[in-house]
Image 1 (tube, rainbow over the protein chains, first blue to last red):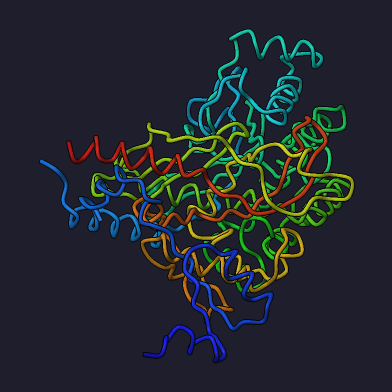
Image 2: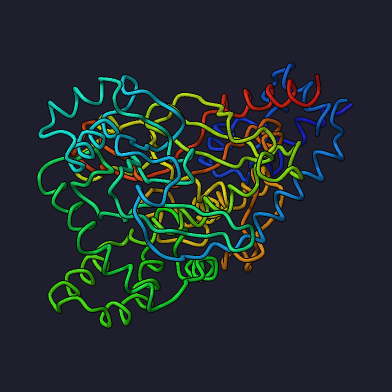
Length: 57
Length: 424
């Protein structure tokens, strides 16, 4: 079976980048059409704060 | 019994209603000693959360020294410093006295103050005159020229503007702030339009006062030459708007997670939350402003973030309306698109949108209003503040301008306190 990832790389790639902005910046520098989604884990991954939010948000 | 999500949402909706229905109005002028509750001849008010003399930043210490000399409580800086450290002076945040002050935010007994009343809720807020740029008290300068200017503000400009305001009558600041956002101001760091509009109101009245031609010309030139003159009116306008949201003022906002105060003293950044009351500050170390520095200065010259002026962002203007002020990026760095993005991003962490304060470039969308500590923690997006940078060395003045944020610790501590108050 043909590897679909390899097929993907034969075409013009369009990237949706989540989280770390430097990945987006690098793609943009190389002229790859990209959009960046400013995403972070809920409460920055802090479990104590996340559990408070579960009760009140 | 633990509070429910529905009760929190209802309290937050109430806070938003109070913010949006506020009617901040300039009703006149007075002096700190006569009009600000709790002032004594030996009280010095400062910006930000509570701080003692030992921990005050350079500009704030310099401004205290200047104020003590201005009040005649010390004859020189050495004597003023000794008095400030002696324990005989009462230091208290402006925010504990219905007042706000830009940068060092120092207010002393004889200083003239604008009196702004929230006509919807009846509470008042106070702010001194803006002294202009360069060597000024709010940046910690206390040279003779600074003290002379403070004396002139008290002895000449104050009676002129006071009499002028008795001729103009009350000035609707909400309408004026709404208008300046349509004219390229953000309401915090760019005040050219605001100062111009105020000048248009005041000038015809000033010429009708009983003072000499020379005094009136000097007063008009001073207001005209200071682009930030209007800042000291947007700040108390926002202050009296937000003070009406505290649950110890209005029980309907009990359980609200909306931020009612953001302020910095150059040492710490502090926030207060409507549903947690006026007595609780949640603080973290003040950060260095990221921005553009004036020629000859770098970030190494900068004092950490200082001033009460971010009461504007707390109310939904300032950095939250950066998209309304594209020219400001030449002052703080970035591009007009960055300015729009800052404004757009703030909708992620707020309860609602303004009905009066609007951003033309976002199709007149109301500005993001009512910072919700839950949303800040969830998204990890911190409020954006558009601000000036004070030199850490007293008396040097402004060394730049840029963007800064409250430390996340303020919101984390507030959320934990909310849990202890309402869930346990």
